[in-house]
Length: 122
Image (cartoon, rainbow, N blue to C red; front, side, top):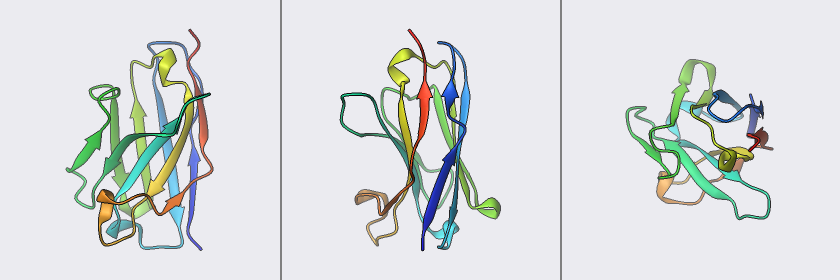
C-alpha cells in the first residue's frame, strides 16, 4: 500500500519561510516523478510544483516561481518543498502527490497524501 505523509506545515508570518517534507512508502520512490498541490479555503485544488526522476527537471506554478524550490532525496524516499517569501495567498492545505503511470507528470497524480496546513496571516 502506497503512503505519502506530509509534514512541516504551520503558521508563519508574511515574508517567512517553511520547508514541507513528504515521506513515501509502498513503492519505488526513485523511479517516479513527485509533486505538490495546494487547496486554499473556498478554492479548487491547484498545482504548485513537480520534480522529475531527474531532479534537475522541475516545474512550478507561476504564482510560486522564484519563491519555492522542490527537491528530492531518493535515499530517504522524501520530497521537499522549500518555501520562501511566503504571502497570505499561500495559505492552503498542501498535498504531496506521485505520478506512477507511464505518462509521468503529464497525467493526473496517482496517490495523494493527507495534506499539511500552511497559514500565512495577512
